[in-house]
Image (cartoon, rainbow, N blue to C red; front, side):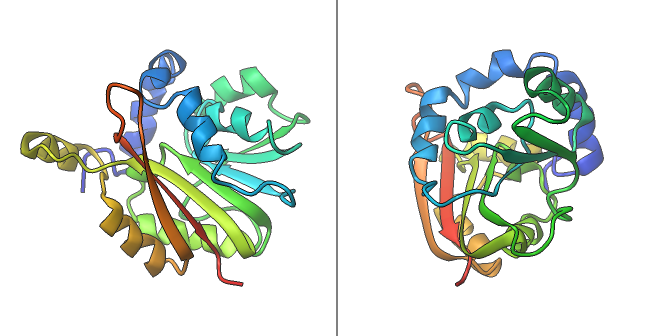
Length: 207
């Protein structure tokens, strides 16, 4: 388990990263990648959408191009403060909650879509969190998760394993299927200089 796959250390990490997150993020996860990921989802009948690990609200902003309201959750108060500055803390199109991906504060069968980008790598128990996603999704609901693709270079692999969760499509298959999802598919994404830095997985909750 990597050093940042720990909730307390991840919160401390984002206490400082939140100060520059919006300036750094476009080099790793940009609008073009977000748009491509959003195109994988079916929004036509979606009313209830959840963004887990919303951070400063980059994905929330993209989701709001497709739906009127997004429920957004993060464990970092410092990241959420940045999101509040963009959308307002209450009463706006983004309904923010501070909470844990492994214990979502929502009722079963609530959401049509659960989205999470740039968060799974910090979860100590990713399958447990994915099971929570499955629980709060309506039958047949969609899930989309963006995480870091496992590097091919052996030195990079050692660094990746020491830091946080990196995984390939085979591990993604295992995690999502262990969590009870069906129709599991993957897309590799990245900026032009690193086109496969991210692995985006889409799947459905059972009907």
